[in-house]
Image (cartoon, rainbow, N blue to C red):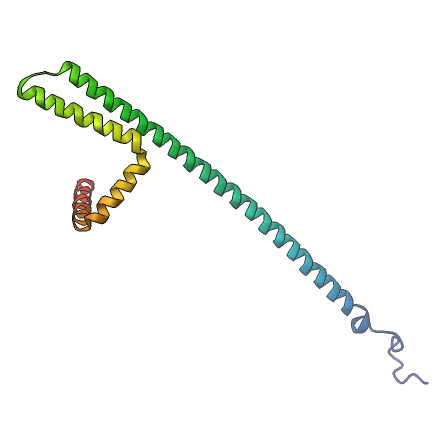
Length: 155
């Protein structure tokens, strides 16, 4: 067979763009895609680990704060009961002032007992039940407190 196009020397050879590099490009694109998937998977796993660690830390911190708040509540309850005893000892014992002193001491003592027995969670439950039983007064009280806060912050 005669060479029709004498100027072209590579006519009998494969063109590198036709057969040789197409599969290689596809292989390298697949490899890059797989590497990208691996990196994305690795980043996702690390993000999950960090998220889990942060959630655990927040949970531990909240638990510690809760325990400290309960301890503080117990301490306040003990102080209230001690103050009630002091008022009973040092206050007047007879007449109208003696009666008032006894009432104040009784109230402090029962409040301290309530705090020790119920704690903050019991107080929250009682407050929730109170609001459920009396929603209109609770709403009006909230509006009043909000109004007073707004006035105090404006000044």
